[in-house]
Amino acid sequence: MRLLSFLTDIEKAIVAESPMVDGGAWEATRMVNFQQGLGRLTLVNRAPAELPLPGGTIFLQAFALADGSQCLKATLSWNDSQITHAIPVYATPAVKWKVEASRIATMWMEGPPPAAKAADLPTQGLTPLSATG
Image 1: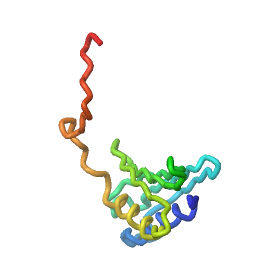
Image 2: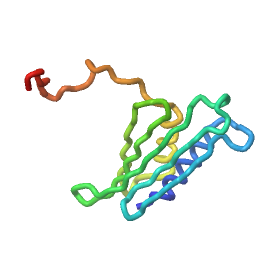
Image 3: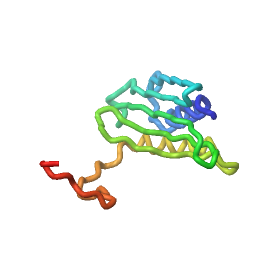
């Protein structure tokens, strides 16, 4: 799977979408474990007063689906937020990796989605447990 090159494409897209700041807007650290199929891009802003985001992490996980096809899951997180957002990218002949990297970068740059209210979460037919068990 293309963990390192995909992380690089995401980083380049974030830099391209960021405001121009002397020395660059972001300090990026990448880490990849090819054996485990994991990658992480950590971004810290260099000029906090000029950027709307406090930084955060994009975590990639590569795995095979039940039908044998490959998938990358990007999990976006932001500093000072408990919210994460997962985005799957399926390895198909039609996938355009740079476009997918740009889409993930854009979603990360938009910041965390609004927190879902407990009443809006699906219950999927689950019944709450009583205090007595």
